[in-house]
Image 1 (tube, rainbow, N blue to C red):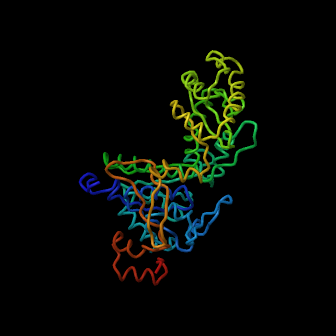
Image 2 (spheres, rainbow, N blue to C red):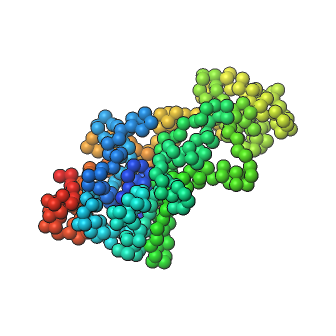
Image 3 (cartoon, rainbow, N blue to C red):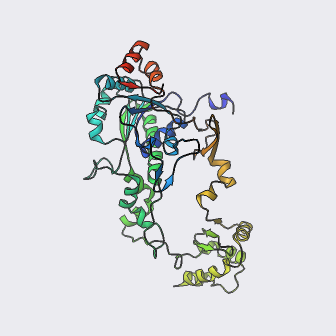
Length: 408
């Protein structure tokens, strides 16, 4: 791609984001905006380091690397600049206000009481910069009896119904999928910020934007909530009585699982039965009858057990069917399709590294990684000089007084 094709710019060139967030859901938004080309300044509190800088495991999952890096922090902070300021001091708050005045977005996931005490609430910052997009992530949303309560991904998967909606109806509760709500909340937060920036471009008005873990979970379960709101009862999937045997998963002859996804089943029945060589299976009319899918599932269990998965995948492809393997994440991570579209390689001083690529492809302004996560306070002096307008002497004085921290 030439500079002319992309205009010589990234999607968010010229946008400055002050990211005052911690843990995972909040920081994901900043990382995405950085990948889109925004200048993202990670505001960290002196004496109160983001816990994810030290955390190496969640739910037994190891997030460390052989090079001693912390994937949990690195994964949400890549491409950001770190500024470390003591927010308990008046001079520290004044430094933040000068950054706010020159920023387009202030993004945070701290509780409202913490923000008010620090003088970083929306009424205060919007007076300093009326065009500011003030983005906040909470656990339960801006209204209701739980609006000020603390929450995490794990808890919201239980509260929202997501945990009970997963798994087989005959099994125990399925454990939550680690960080799935957090990750999606960060994506929705970034999307909401960009939408607010577009509105500001058209009207000149800044505004407060509120994203929440619960709101994200409700969106992820949109069909489920829509059905319940209309009086329907949603049951868990049953592999033995699936309601549609052509939309189910089966164990193949080599012990590997394969998933079929065909709906409506009548449309695909002819190709499906040909691919599997079914001679005594129910007719299309029989499929509509009571118990038809349960009986067919028993037949398909026996048929799929006669060949290894790879053979079934080839037969499915030949007959235009949706047959795909049930992969582990380790298996999916080495799939050619994943690597071709959604993996990004980078060479650093520590060696070659790979990270998930962005989920959307832009033809003229591709989204890309922006390097490793910053060390604590790595860019404090640079940002205070270039963004907040401090002189060398002023920065040196702030450092000597302990108002700011640098990595040097």
